[in-house]
Amino acid sequence: MFRRTLSRLSWVDLFLRAFQLVAAVVIIIGLVNTFTTARYTSGQWATLVFSGLAQGSIYALIALGYTLVYGILLMINFAHGEVYMAGAFSTVFLAIHFARTGFLARSPLIAIVILILFSAAISTTIAVLLERIAYRPLRNAPRLIPLITAIGASFALQYTFRGLYGTQFRAYPDIAVLKGTWNILGFDVPLVQLVVFLAALGLMVVLYWYVERTRAGKAMRAVSEDKAVARLMGIDIDKVIVSTFALGGALAGAAGVFNGLYRPQGVFFLMGFFPGIKAFTAAVLGGIGNIPGAMMGGLLLGLIESLGPNSVLEGLGIPATNQLKDAIAFIMLVLILIFRPQGIFGERLAEKKA
Amino acid sequence: MAMLEVRDIHTYYGNIHALKGVTLEVNQGEIVTLIGANGAGKTTTLRTISGLLHPRQGSISLDGEDITACPAHELVYRGIAMVPEGRGVFAKMSVQENLEMGAYHRSDRPGISADMERVFTLFPRLRERRRQVAGTLSGGEQQMLATGRALMSKPRLLLMDEPSMGLAPILVEGIFDTIQAINKEGTTVLLVEQNALMALSIASRGYVLQTGQIVLTDQAEKLKKNEMVQKAYLGIE
Image: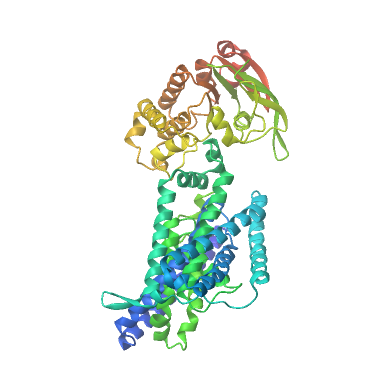
């Protein structure tokens, strides 16, 4: 009996090791091939790095919503992509209105701030309603049940917004001041990427400060460690849980506007699905439940997605590599779940009693 | 009128009938102990008083006001604090942050820092480790932290669940000395203990709990001499 478990275990280990080795070899071959043939200039690589960071910071903002909620409730809010969509999709109409009245051209900074606040407010409202209507009644249910509910809520939200705004793609208006480039270390960086990256970074710093330093943030950490003891301290855990959803929603709403400014292809009712799953990947990559982990995971995923196709896949002679971005993100998710399920910064899940 | 009056409470865990009519009283300024074997319902009684559980039957009142349906987080405002079983410190938060959580419901900053000073005087070890993460403290230090954290809420009634659990005998004496000191400063204490001898030696009265019911109550001194208590809880044949 013991021998059998032993041999079975070692076979699985062996297989995983071999798999790890093959994956590493494939990646290295790809990298070596790319760089020995000097396909791209350093300027081109820098472009990829900057766009990866901008995209990554959007992932990071959304990922924080997954990780905050998971930290408190040990639940994956799979409708979080729709929370993001709700803000981004609703705000596009306000943005178009601002562009039409000329407000956006006259005072772009104020206009963008208003758009961000508006989008954050919409996403926060949706996130809070989601908690109140869909998740709170199931707080003591087995863990699979809120997960199924989340998927249901996700469809419900998608088609509610389809009903509200229709099936059309709608693009955020161009903002003239964001069109330029900025020279950093001799590389021309599109201003919009810089703005998105810095603004997202600013929000993350504020969030980190909030969780680490403020009374409400400390209460949040206390609830995530032990709900019963937190209640004994006089903390109303329902309020803390609602504020966690609200915070995650606000960040997702801001990410929605950043995405609109950064990517011209427009928004529509299904737009939340891919960023949602990718941000989830980023949260898992950093270690779900870990706030700095979600930030780093987002940035890292953005970089890998941006650099991966050109540096690894092209070296392997795979055609049309840029269309494989999404594949890279999901291969990453699978690899993390196999080899380091606790993520880069995460602790082992077994430590927390689910 | 007693400060805390528990009248015939019945508490359930799902379908398990854990408390089958517990009645007890704690008067202002007393140390009262609740002793009993494992699984007798001691922790359940404290969790019911602190509002983490609610009884299906019976009532609990504090200073004559009914608190039976009061949620746990509101009872802190009425002056009840609990040191939970297994100490329940926030392991990832620093010693200082744990103490701040104890004063979560208070907004008088000068009062809070005065009380933190008082806790540090009571437990100098905590002052040395105030920036340290609570999970890295020893068991005895965690007990000090849990006690100090409860004191930070300025409780009138302190519920303590097995403060001696898992501690070396020398530390246990220290903990019991502290409980007496806290009591002398005016905090009423309801103490749940398996270490019945120690508990009875600092308490004024005691209750004996058996399978969810109070089977005996008396002055602590008399309980110590009671034959049944000696046999069952003091290990004296």
